[in-house]
Length: 102
Image 1 (cartoon, helix red, strand yellow):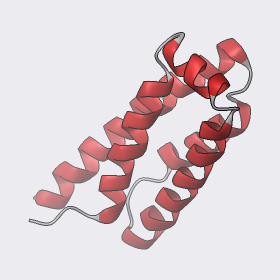
Image 2 (cartoon, helix red, strand yellow):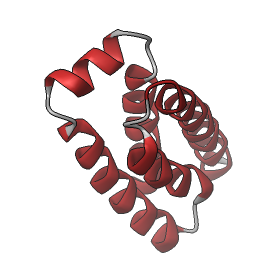
Image 3 (cartoon, one colour):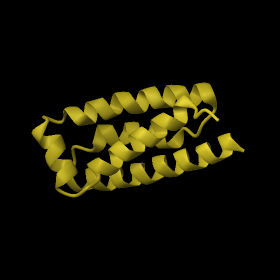
Image 4 (cartoon, one colour):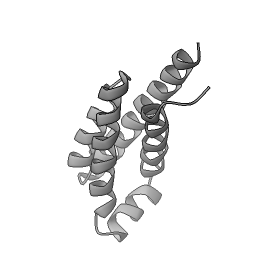
């Protein structure tokens, strides 16, 4: 069975957020790239949200991701938000993928 686009994007954004949540590595990557990854993630979360609306998939993870992208420049808060967003996105993807296959 074919995976929905929204579910694939939830997996991709969830894994990207998990990478950004790795202490020192994720933060170092964001800072060394001039905070551009936060803008890229903002756009990815917006695209994912569009497909979630279109395909009736869970939207909370993408909304949380947009908020995270806006606030992640704050050191400790950014790490916590990336971690929380990664967990929510990956759980949403896993649950959506499971219900789509049934």
